[in-house]
Image 1: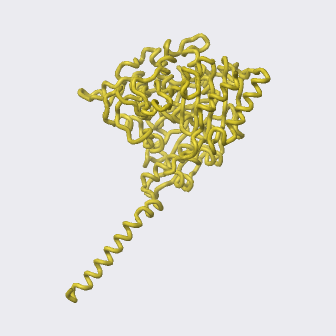
Image 2: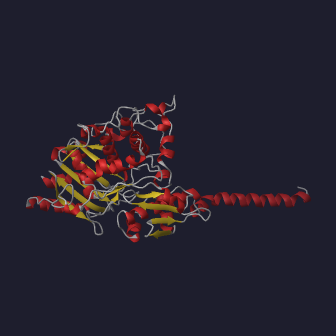
Image 3: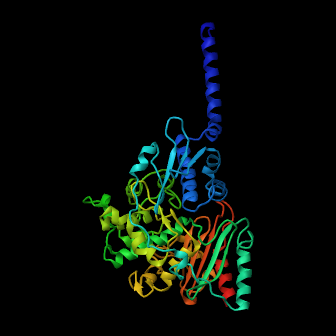
Length: 477
């Protein structure tokens, strides 16, 4: 090597070594400083749950942090713990800073509609443009009205032996061990023949405390659709009303509402469960996210669990109604308030699209009311709210089923899960099922509804819901 070139070669070697060191350290640097978008999503998660927990459920910031913000998706956990939040109890907003170059993530509460997240980058001036619910609930105190429309005289006294068996079964549900090590139950409620025969809550929760339903809200979506069918606004076997699919030649235009309800759209999904974080915690709109997916299978030929299918089904009802104000009021005036679900808050995106696939806050008793509506095939106090046979429709196996059904896993109907003897439960049992341990069992042969609410941890033991329901039914024998 010539002397003039030696310093240059040495310099290049130093640069190469430095570059190699940076590449080797890249994963550590990424862990220490997550990408801005990941921080934005984590900030949105914290803003959304603090807002809903404080202003929907009346919880303290510390209680929301301990329950809703712990045991969550691991990719968000560390950031959610450290990102700073500001709660404005006068304006009923929560702001979480995540990037010095952008406004904080903001979630804002509105009466009836709960909390909506603003899009990433939007400032507080955008709050004024969020949709508002103008209709008001029926007058009167729900606690003063008789069950099931209200909460007066809701409890029935079972025989002493049955009461003792139910009490023992309730104890096991709350012991953090019997149905899964470390599982966290907040509420259990059992209704038989229309009356509550067992009910227990964890300290800090009661009959008025709502929690997020997670995917159990999909069954509320089925109910809203059923009411729209009863009004002849939609038909389940007709193509879904998705404006973005109406262009001539778009193959998605043939996807039916029933196929969406069966999780059989054939649309591409972004991973197992199709978490749709861009909508749930990213401030994205349903129209922006859910309508953009392309086909990857013939509609109806494949089962794949997808939040987008639920979002699209709810959007189809909004499109069919046509009027934005009426569409916003429809779940309340046509379903929730008609069956006494006065402690239920379905939330929307910032454009007024309901996120009924997950973002519904409700109580154990309100979920029991929804179960009672299905036990009576959509009839409430003599009035038919859902089409005749709707309960059978949602509880009939979809044409395509989950792959693990053959090995004994529950099947799927229309936004309800299907259980039976293979899970140790009576034939015809169907279930609302949501993340972190939200379950509502509807057992027509026993005239029973069983509700379990919880805060089970992501990555931890799953609550053994089938065994739990089996034990509760056994206690009723």
